Length: 304
Image 1 (tube, helix red, strand yellow):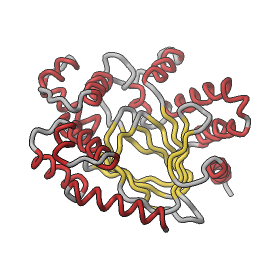
Image 2 (cartoon, one colour):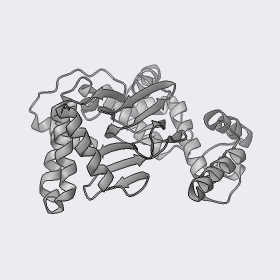
Image 3 (cartoon, rainbow, N blue to C red):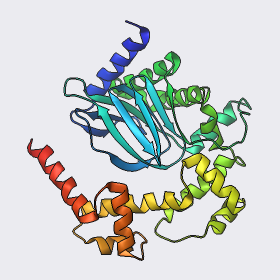
Image 4 (cartoon, helix red, strand yellow):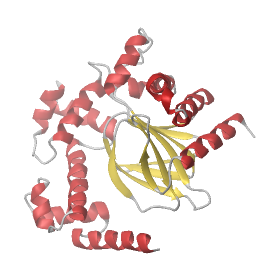
């Protein structure tokens, strides 16, 4: 048995001890959560926050626009900005559940780390895709395991968890795609400028916008903004906004007793028919039929 497999096995045991059922579980360590699924899941639409996620067991696939990312045990995925994605666990059983370790971070944490690194960055300012997959290295896996072990020594969490988290982020930035993480925190970089546009759209997705206004916010021409935004997110600003609107619409339909036309207006659509068409394209079913189907699936899982 290799060192990697031994460490993955121990990390899996820590996750099992701290997750009593399927789902996403927060932990006593700030910004750290564990994910456990005992069966394949339906496609789940959501927004990736800036985060690092390593799969310990099982397999998952994620779609960013039309790009597909497949990853399994000993792979990790990094999202350097907020991104609307579709994810699905594709390999998991009751005996061998899907297990994952997820650590969120902020641009401020990356910037502080870069400042302490005293100019070790310098990997260029070109915009890069904000989502990528890599194989975990032993040094990174070791740091991840040391952070997870703190859950068995909770008195050490306040002192040691910030140090271990900083080490994890530093090792990620030393990896093959680390510059994508750096650039989102470095003022003046293309990714940094696009991140601010992403944050603006995310906070104001209900409102309409002109591409020229977004370009001015990023201090770019409209054509340049469009090109760099698509390089970072794999979609245009309009497509990004549409994803956010439709995800919020589905959340509202599932959580409230309201009709599709009302929800359409609440998330920024002026035309209920356009909303219904775009909703069907994204989720595969018209709003009413989709919500009925999802609720029936939930009831079936509860009663199974």
